[in-house]
Length: 346
Picture 1 (cartoon, rainbow, N blue to C red):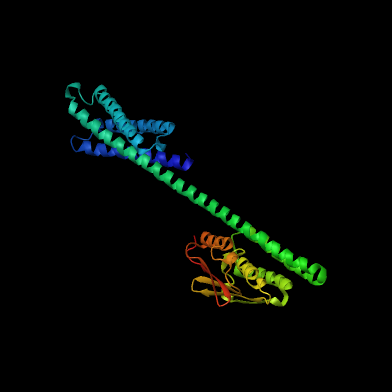
Picture 2: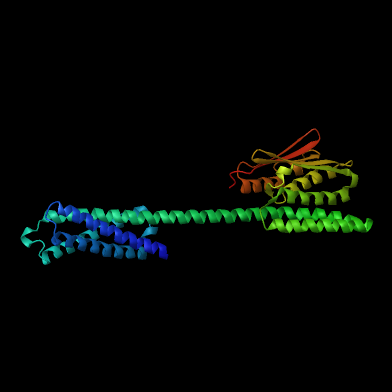
């Protein structure tokens, strides 16, 4: 138990039993003249309750009662409450008789039973408060641990999904550079510079789940320039991103992945090549991204393909159920559209 909880425990113990003693004194004064003979037994009762409940608490902690299921805890609490109440009743009866507060001939068995019943109820209330607080604290701790676990799982899932994307990106980029080394060394140097920038972007992205759309689009432009070296005039692309959308967060490498898919499964498969267009707009509190390329939905680019499933899962983990990725094909065009809500993020 930490120091704050220990301090709170003693404050509650001392305050609770002091109030209990004062209330008993006030009630006693209704039936007899106020005197130390009425005050002293109740002060003794409060002190006795404080000591016995502290011993009771130590026993509960030592035996681990707070971890027991209710079906096993309730009988123990009932028995302990009645047992402590019986001890308190016996001690108090001896006390008032020994100190002459009540003469032996004035003793009434019914009074003892009433006292036993009242003290049993008091102990049950004490137990209810004690175990109720512990169950509440345990529930809070379990909730915190659950959220920590979910956060760790989410982070692991995101890292695993990103790990499946980066090798594909590096493989394509290296192929583009390799094609230039013999044909045009100067352009190969430029390509290496662009590739180095892409690698820096990838390394930075590996340490975080999201990046700004502006940074992502800088990497996409560098990637498209590398691919333009490989595909030459077969690749025609256009980027149209609204300035208001540049600060919006996006999953790292998401746009890069969609562009790669558009080239690999669309433009690059056609002898005449094709076109690729990237647009981004803010629509209220949501970002809308659109990657459109020449091509048709083939087996590798189906909406349920691994890359698309990974992208959808990353969106869900980062932005909640409101995030969406759709992939459609018609009239010789394939369109990937992403919606990212920027409010109520998980």
